[in-house]
Length: 521
Image (cartoon, rainbow, N blue to C red):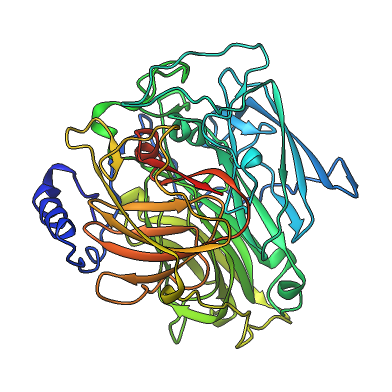
């Protein structure tokens, strides 16, 4: 399906706005709606899919471990790497690689990560999905300036005031992540104000996996049969360099993208762990796929081609916030930017030699396929999928302390994307939850907006007039809010006090002001 255009959607948006304005619950969003954005085309012949092997990011080892936790060192720097066969591409990488190294932690044991900035621009590190104190959460104005001390002065976003609370360092910064949370797949990425999209596009993203005793006790696939898969689309210039439509290619002064890409930047090369349409050799056994949509704006509908005999291609065992209560079968997985899905695929149901394509039903041509699995010969498989995985206590909206309404919409003149008609400003507080309180948030969209809350995970109560959607189970930190949709979520703010943000994770929307603050006290 082709991406939704902003211009062609105006009538529907107007109807959605009118319904929301009088408090009428909206129907569920447009079925099968694909990505909001415009495709950026590579300027060179694309390689044939399924010609390069899948690789996994290296696991980063602590430099030391002590009573305070496990200590890590990461340097953010430019590097020349081979992404497209035979060409060199300059990336910005954590330790000079894309994706960055995977950090594996134990629940409740802090990870203390020291970042050194050798890039020519300020950076900010956010552990996405982490229950993290304010000073290490990666607030967008908490810059690590380049080591040379250069501090660019950027034009403000529309309506944005200076941030008197910004915590700025030069050259380096140490982030402390308590990780007092369930086992799950988190990811870390750049979160610099107004330049997140461009910085992540250049490579600043990586996995951070949390383990715990509950998960370790389950007979799930592990070791070589657990595959973290970071999926992202990118475009390339004729010389192999990354192509992105920044207004300021230096990413120093002028934020934003060229006008036609303000709805989101899509691209024509699908990368998995930084490799274009890779191929992986798998045994005839169950595999655990840790799926992460690290694209700026692209949504995916993942399927297996051919589907396995008997159907139920994927068995979902976890979501953004960890294990579900019980496994859920799916024929397809729909993923918005920043969502994670923890799924089991049983390649033992295929004959040896079968070529299984992980396809994308929301794409076409080069974006209609993601990677390929080559099924080997029969082998032993001690894993199984238990009927019960974990326990999740539902939050009761009848006991919520506050209900809030947030509308996510175009500014009206393509100058930005706003929440409740207001652009992001570090000095405006959109919500002030009390520490330990429970709140219900009603979210209304014009176009597709994957909404992410920092600090907390939430549960989805409803979409339109119905209950949670097919992919809304468990604890979430991103909700895939579809065009012209109203959804309701519930969260408990019981971790840390301070100022945090919530925003659209279409990174071009985020960079163009679709972000707000909440302060927990």
